[in-house]
Length: 298
Ligand code: UDP
Ligand code: MN
Image (cartoon, rainbow, N blue to C red; front, side, top):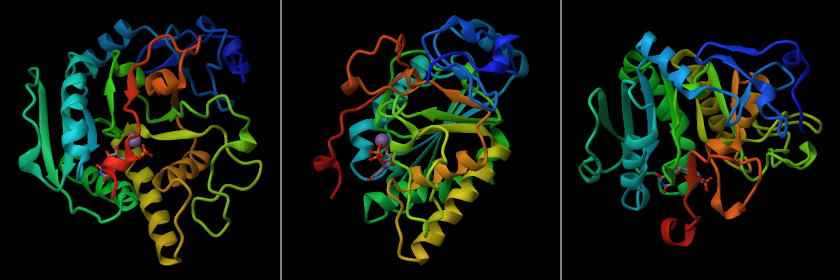
């Protein structure tokens, strides 16, 4: 789907975090959802204006990441080092690293105003369970210290690194990431859970976009609701002996179908280099690591 949405045709999109968004700057892509939320692409926002606004509001931004088992040695150092170069520069940031081995977390030098907290989690036996357990763990953390010290939180996979600036232009009450592999697919082919017995199921014809669970975020209150919904759905499925097609991501997609995100990030924000060149991908901000499942998953 291409083109600016009807509600954006008459006016620039007002945005709390950038002032104004210019949806016309990118006539090559869809810059607004059917419910009026901006889809931010390079060129539609002013990163300097977003930074200025965020500094005025003195927002503390949380960034959560899980590094359990071999994912810790493999990815965490690069994720954090590149975050120091690109994530919310000049802004108070608190990293939350969840791992079963706090002592093995690399000591990354942090700029002033930035802190790192390590939270111990149990190591689940199956990688799917590590991934799914995140919703419950995040829910608890958001109800505790993280929720008290951060205004907005981004929740990310660790198997990626920052390549471009990822600043306060991404902030909104709730934020969803377009999946790099699926953003141009016809809706009926999107890999939603279709088994009606699952809490994550979408009926035929339902669904707006396919969102990637490697990046989602929002205000603490919105994320409390999101994580509660997903953790509940995951638990309900488990009790019925079900597991949704893409695990926690399926439940996240169900949540965003029911509760539309206030802002959508273009695939530039979380890009897979394996896809190759795409004219509309001007400035990738996060890059996925190649999938090395054999070496990482038992
Ligand atoms: N994860 C982890 N250890 C594991 C499995 C998963 O730390 O054994 C965390 C890690 O942050 C990872 C995320 O859960 O990025 C999601 O898993 P993965 O990236 O393997 O899923 P995919 O991106 O392939 O859907
Ligand atoms: Mn991943």
